[in-house]
Image (cartoon, rainbow, N blue to C red; front, top):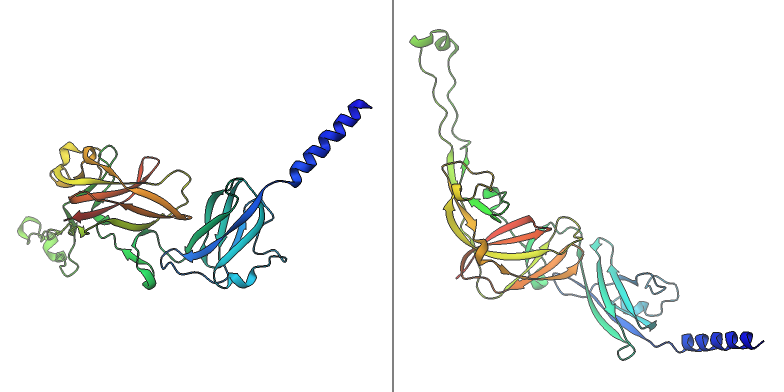
Length: 292
């Protein structure tokens, strides 16, 4: 009997503790990542919980028209708040509430699913403005050397045609006319670097889902002999190239914005440099910049 009473008392204490669990409010706003403007009628939910703006009893539906949401009586703890919208890429955001700070206010960002992979500059009300990677066809695949560019790229001039050899001339053998040699390929030089002054601040849209951290670094761009960079593929033996000086590399700050979208910030090096985005030690993309 005594044991039974002890068990009952313990159950009542546990029930009382559950009933007194500290709760708070998780609220915020959902905005377009590129314009910063609030998005009408987003969908928000807290992963693995009952809290969702799609619930029939959700009582702040009018606020959703202004991109705002609110969940009340949320027990303190660690949560993942997810935001999305039709034809937009969603975001997943970690939030922690405690008994001392049971409330949380968030600003969540999502972006159009029509945004192509690549680098973008913040463009305010004008929306995304892509930085064209015009150096990509000059880039080479490197291992230890981080990154490299050819200084010139052979490009056949479409206006120049290789002369046809007359069949009768072929039959004449040595006495016939010599076949005209194909014209030398036109060499197109590496485009000048993109000039940027002041603080570096861009968005980077990754082409695939990132399960490991995205790394952004910038390296001094130095001209060198191909013989010193045998790990870089795509060069001819007698070529020179532009390479990343890995001894002078500098980390840039990578901030998660939404799925596959990151904000890259930091102070660039002085002079010409190669900016590298990588994951798991493998280069995803490189850009050629100059900070004057």
